Amino acid sequence: MAPGAGRFAPSPSADLHIGNLRTAILAWLFARSTGRRFLMRVEDLDDRTHSDVARRQLDDLAAIGLTWDGPVECQSEHPARYDAVVDTLAEQRLLYECFCSRRDIAQAPRAPHAPQGAYPGTCRDLTDTEREARRRETGRPPALRLRTDAITYTVHDLLHGEYTGIVDDFVVRRGDGVPAYNLAVVVDDAAQGVDQVVRGDDLLPSSPRQAYLARLLGYPEPTYAHVALVLNEDGARLAKRDGAVTLPEIGVPRALAQIASSLGYSAATPEQMLTQFKPAALPREPWIYHPT
Image (cartoon, rainbow, N blue to C red; front, side):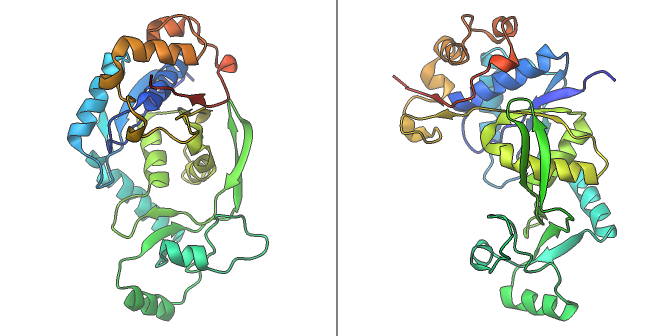
């Protein structure tokens, strides 16, 4: 079968910084170098996202020379897509209501063999009576968790090799009714024919959950490539406080030159980088960004 598509899927909660732009270019390079379509998706389910920010993000991506195939897709346009999958999982008795807050989870006792960060299963086997009691106690709608049969799952990453991470009973729909990231991204990728996922390596730990869910739903698991992040001079993730980090502040020519240099390329535009692109030669360590 011909390759499907790669994608870049920003959340429009803030303007893109140079680290986001670098990851977008890498996602484009991976897709174009393998003959895939390149798609743009706006992940705007969260109430902290804004349409004006989304427009600026897309303008910045176009300004640095990225092209994408077909119209931009917004998650907020597809509530029925997520509801249908949640309904299917519920019909298969693979979901249960969870009333736990983050504090409840952090303070809950854990089995000695349980991985750090895994959900302790507090609400997994509540009786109907216990569930109603929890509903009255909390006074808030429950989240829905996936009843999994695995604690960990292994994926293959083009840059990191075999990676085994926590699966546990993760949330697929939040208490406010919004689809959780781990469900939405899997459903969207399958619906759009995305079979290559390139993103920052801070998201590598989420890939086992997403690959597990894809398998459970009968979707093909995508090819993963988690690229090194861009950090500030203190070794932390870039933020507005780090100075000139967005495209309007840096300027297109300088931003492209900096990104190309960080990847070891002599040419600056994405099209020029494509002629030199070799995934195996990509840096594995974070790029420390100096704004001046």
